[in-house]
Each structure stands twice: as structure tokens, then as C-alpha cells.
Image 1 (cartoon, one colour):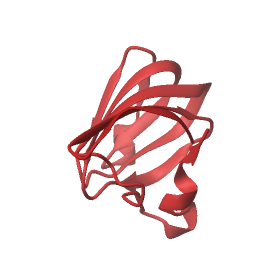
Image 2 (tube, helix red, strand yellow):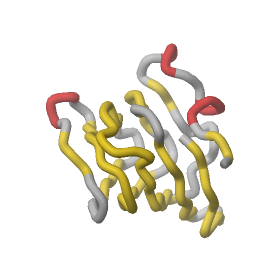
Image 3 (spheres, one colour):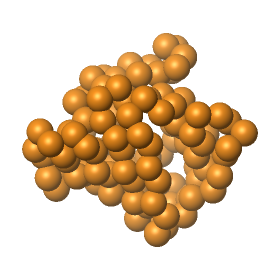
Image 4 (tube, one colour):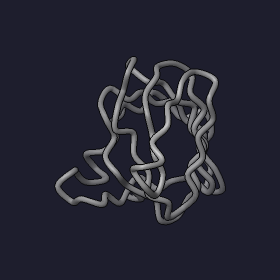
Length: 112
């Protein structure tokens, strides 16, 4: 995942644009709600339970409340580009993988 840029970067909220090139493993954020608007690309996501897997495409809005496990197991067109709004701002360390072998917060997103 590559972080393109922050549009707003404040303690109470942040807005950023980022690109996803590969599936995103199950994870959650302890301290923020994550709002994602799909700008381009297509794929699938699920929340809480893999059985809820659904498709997303440009123009779709995804919401993951704090503590809600979510994943993007399949990218059908990539990169997927999101406008992300986190409330409050997501600290870079606030990425908790369900399977610790999937990575760390530091390996999750890279500056472009």
C-alpha cells in the first residue's frame, strides 16, 4: 500500500489518498473509524466475517468502525485508489493484524 499524500492532517481527523496493489489481510484499528471512498480500481472486501465478502468499485463508500475487523482479499483492477478519512487521525501504529505473520503496522503502508 502506498500513501500518496495527506490532504488534511489534524489530530481530530485526517484525509489522505492512497493506492493498494495487493490484497489486504484482516486487520482493525483500535483508535479510529476509517471511511474509504473508492476513486478507481475494483475488488472485494469483508467486515467481521469472511462470509460477508462484497464487491466494491469506483463511487462506492466503505466504512470500518474502530475495532471492526476488515480485509480486502481480492483486487480485480489495480491499483485501487482510495480517498480515506480517519476520525480521529489514525496513528501509523494503529494497524492490528489478526494473523501476526501478515505484517506489522510499519510494513503495512509506505510513503510514495
